[in-house]
Image (tube, rainbow, N blue to C red):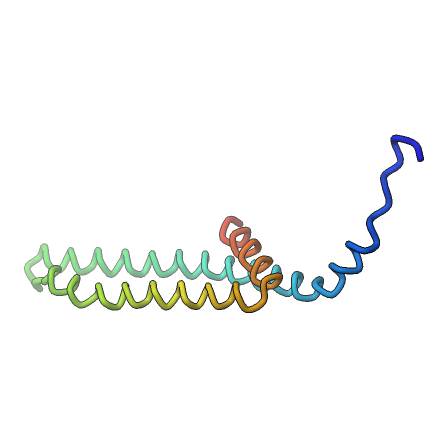
Length: 116
């Protein structure tokens, strides 16, 4: 075998990866789609929340309403804390259930979040 000729792929490695290919490819496709959707929805949500905040501040500045931000914070903190815990448990379950799918999903999710 000459130095410029590539070595043939290891047939045992290829045989062991073949059953995982459907799971890897489906995980990658779904992860990319989820990442792209999260990015788009996140931008829309940030825009809506920002405009709502701006409208509330303008109405408060005009004296049309009074906003009790301390009360809003007290009401929102349990929801945000519980939501973060639920999201981390859900993500951990996905990764532990089917490792090839979960790995491909997370990698493609990150790629989907980085797309323009």
